[in-house]
Length: 190
Image 1 (cartoon, rainbow, N blue to C red):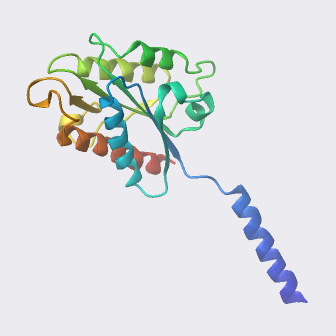
Image 2 (tube, rainbow, N blue to C red):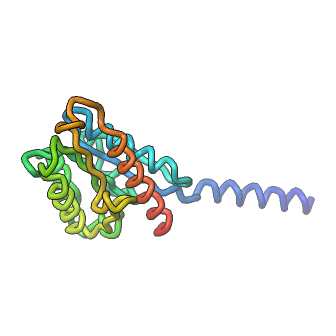
Image 3 (cartoon, rainbow, N blue to C red):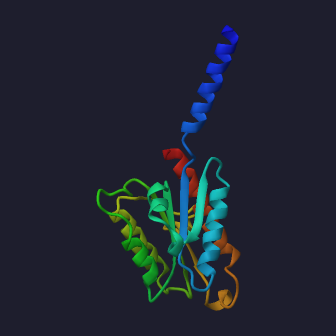
């Protein structure tokens, strides 16, 4: 009888622990993409995140993201095309929709990626603009995996050897490295 009671206790404890177990950290990878190039970068970021064990991620366009997904994410990786040397109006509106009262995004991890039609068209300016917006919310910024991706990942998509093609593998690898680095950092702080 004592063994049955002991077994029942162990099973009940195990079941209750499973019910109340903390879910793995989630990374929200979201973007606005008009041509599909920024979406390709987002998918590469997700590929990098997926290489990190014990994480989940959500990959979707900003138009489909819910406030709960923003609030529950451990990290937000945000992507935008360059639009007149700025983030697109849709990305700006998305950032403007983030809850601010009580700073619920404070201490979340933030990272960015962009696509631009040509060289010196504003990729870093857009990254900095997005980073500044995240910092206003109190987010902690993580850059890419390589020196050449220090502020995040970026891709040239419409000039020279990069015109009229899919996103070059060089840029997709930087996006993967960004995802991998953010994933690793999330595990360290959670």
